[in-house]
Length: 446
Image 1: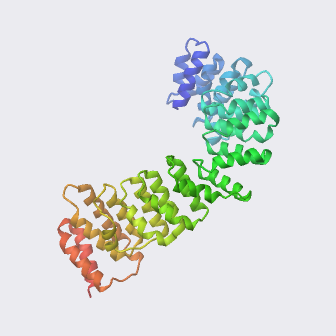
Image 2: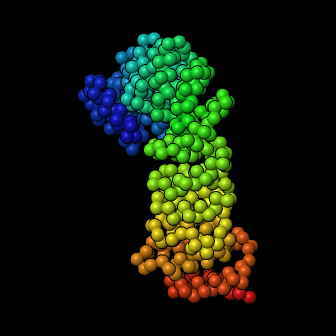
């Protein structure tokens, strides 16, 4: 509705405002269906293009008579002088396709047929490069589908458009261009911030200009998007290039480029270069959180379950993003560890995010170890961390809910530890939670 109002304001700036128009526009939204129908019919007779957005909305009115009146009014407005207003309203028109009160296909086709006539098609060409993204997207597609503009010129202008989807539509037609024009357009597309456009330009370079494509592939080894990097790696490996050495040099050199080190570390993991594990491990303590995150991602891929100890340590990383990634990878590998392993590896209360992420990571472990951990941290959580207390108690509720998902039985040592930890923190639990845990303890102590 807000976009419709913005369109109405633009049309008011472009077309003459007629007397009584405001009242009719307001009446077209009246709660009374008879008054809406009357207002819609009068708007059609008035013939003002400013009414087009409101009338398109009424085409999907809940009253059939209003819908029919709106369609009739819009048909009367389909004159050459109003084509620009209809072109500006294309998003509202196409929105009718998603509306279910009536089948609007025939009406939409009628409007498009009117706009595509020779005397009206200029209106579509005018709005094809509109700064209103939704208008430009539809108009550009119509221009391509019905050859309303020279294809090369259209692709060129679209690749410079601020809207990413308009540029992406143009990229889909790059393969239809040839010669010097294609060379110029590829130079523009290969630098586009949107990955699919860069990838399309890259693929065309590899097909049409293999030598130039190889040069670009060496640059794209350090592209910020993984799919571009993997495409470059695959191409260079096929050409016999020693990609591992390129990445290894970046990882071990004193390069100050954080992004190049990150992508090199991830590239070595993609290549499965296990011999590079020692050099990647050196970056677990790097000053850059981005490099540390890339290091744990790479080591998890190269080492699998053997990366367990370093992932546990990473839960206590000062950077929340690194710690979150460690927690995610632990869940991915479904690693299991005891509460004592956590205590030995990290300081649970060292960083504000560590406790929550460690608690999340413990969900893949043995349910009794998880209970021991929750009771222990509840006991040692300081009084000023009420949010942590709430979080732990919430996790205890979830533990209780998930209890029967595992038939695992506790060992004698686990029973002893659960009883001890519960005795220390039972006063922190509400009555319902105490009853639940005491019932569990009575069952496992027999």
